[in-house]
Length: 188
Image (cartoon, rainbow, N blue to C red; front, top):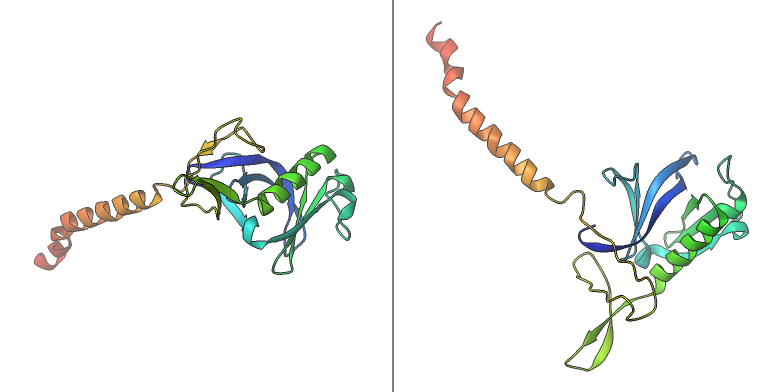
């Protein structure tokens, strides 16, 4: 995510959709409602991303999650079930019951809370649908909610510059070697 506030992050077990196996992923919940799953906490390999503000219907945790068996080492109280708009469910499992409840509350808050901005021309606050292209400035102590703001750059930022540099280098090398490719025809 490009220069956006991180609301919560940590290790969660995620159940795969096809084989129903549990997989340990690093999870980030961003202020725009994106729930991202990575292989490691370095955030280099994005495995899955869900937009909660658009696709989330309900979040359940603990014994509310029926029909799901947790990973071998975790009790049912650690389960988190996210119901999506397309009818599927995202099954997660935290390391403790407290962590499970904290994730549930944060997911519910992210899903339903719009972002409000002040319009000085109107002297009113307006709800703004937040996406990756808005810049949000948060003043600590100015209102309820999370006061800790962590801003991180997108790990894929600058990827196109590297690809363009590689293409340019390949073209220069091809132009330099073009004359050498005609050599076998001159000696035959």
